[in-house]
Length: 367
Ligand SMILES: NC(=O)c1ccc[n+]([C@@H]2O[C@H](COP(=O)([O-])OP(=O)(O)OC[C@H]3O[C@@H](n4cnc5c(N)ncnc54)[C@H](O)[C@@H]3O)[C@@H](O)[C@H]2O)c1
Ligand SMILES: [Zn+2]
Image 1 (tube, rainbow, N blue to C red):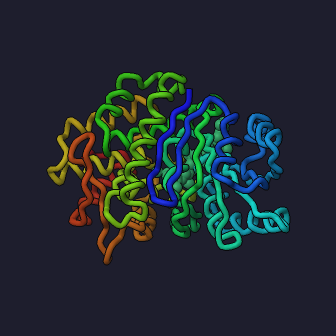
Image 2: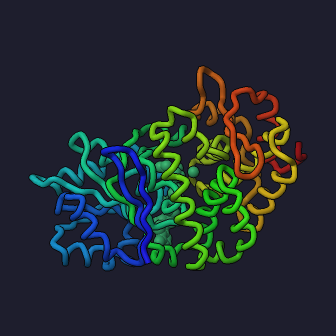
């Protein structure tokens, strides 16, 4: 059974297909009139495991397909790696108009989208996300780019894919830690915009953590619908709405940067960030304390961290200064008004940020 969700952006509109295999990919690419010379960017292990199911249907349908691989690590989302991929692509795609296929998690998706946006001033690309996190979030919306060593996602652009295909079957090999990491973003959507989704994960936490197909069929399209709606209304984050997707990301990104992108997955870091944002929301009189407790309890129930012990506050504070949500020198915080509703505030006292962040980094003394 396939579902299709539309991201409505005028001539840049595209579909997010949830499908049981990649058999639907070649006809969908053909309908879009995309180039028949394609380059898959991925990791070696992913191609070993699932390459036949992807490359087979494409080649049988007449596509000429090449592959470029990058190491599995957030550190592959770098300027240096983008240059390496661009050079390989330039050598492979001589006299060809290429279509890029991003086959991997958020790292491959963000990197490949960035490469597609600058290669020969822009070539089409398609997202084939293989992690829960990428299927529910990063593959949709066209935010592409790379990290600097001291600033997460600091170099990039908006460049929409032509199609997203979520094959739920590829998630079966996802390690427990990565399933949990994706649930971090799912819980974010719940707090941000969907009480029912939050409740679903609360009542089916075990099945969600196990990645049971029945649970995935509920949560993946539900999150995609929220993201598609937000992106359709605020593609370039100029109306404030898209900023809502960054609930938990202020401290989250700082934790990732402060630990050299090695210690925490993105979902783990934003889990801690969501605890901080919830505690600040309570202190600002916005969020009922009981809702903040539910957020923390659900993160614990799914095995996500609620603190990042040992991360130094000065290092996190330094990283926060490079947060793109800074406007005219003031930090904008995405805070919760209770599960299902968020608000952006610029008036969070710095002392409160420090006190709450420290409590999440040391785990001592709840504010
Ligand atoms: N562009 C956006 O809007 C957006 C939104 C959210 C997150 N992100 C970015 O996404 C990145 C995180 O993405 P991620 O969590 O997917 O991490 P990731 O891409 O590093 O993937 C995690 C790990 O899972 C492995 N993997 C991927 N698919 C697998 C499969 N099917 N089976 C087994 N292993 C598999 C990968 O090789 C990797 O080792 C971060 O850089 C984050 O900033 C971007
Ligand atoms: Zn995120």
